[in-house]
Image: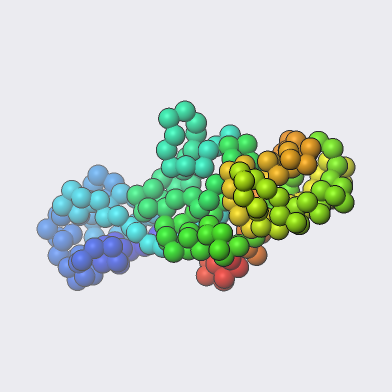
Length: 228
Ligand code: URA
């Protein structure tokens, strides 16, 4: 909750003093009704209009979603439900987008931001930010598979960066990669004769998914942002 005068002053060219006048002049509406006073409390989801135009509350957002299966990682899609349906509606207006991609059937940690520099840092293969996945698959990972991952596998005629394959039980492994090629983990496992039956991203940089519920999102604080 924020006071109307503080909010309008933060996201427009008007000062808090101006807002007192604008309220008196009946130029500000909150959820379709004239603002009652300059110190009216405004909730995140409230729609504030000045002279009929929305006050768009743009601030830097860095957040994480535990993406469930069945949603595509894009802002629009003609057929499928998108991850934007799972996060606050006004994020779209604030230019927030998903960073990198998780397949429709992949679950887990997905970052959202409206900070293009941060997005670039996380995605650029030059920076080699680690992404760790929990993988369920057919067969079992063996020593030669671990070595193949480490040596740099070939995908689309390109040598991949060394990756880490850690078997953790029959048909279960953890995989750590430093790029984000299309279906990368599924294809790397398939090359080694293992079909992925379940895939979940559990870490990006040093940021862990932890025990977030499927479909749950939360904004990161500045300490957590240092984990990338
Ligand atoms: N690798 C995949 O195959 N799929 C993902 O969603 C992420 C990494």
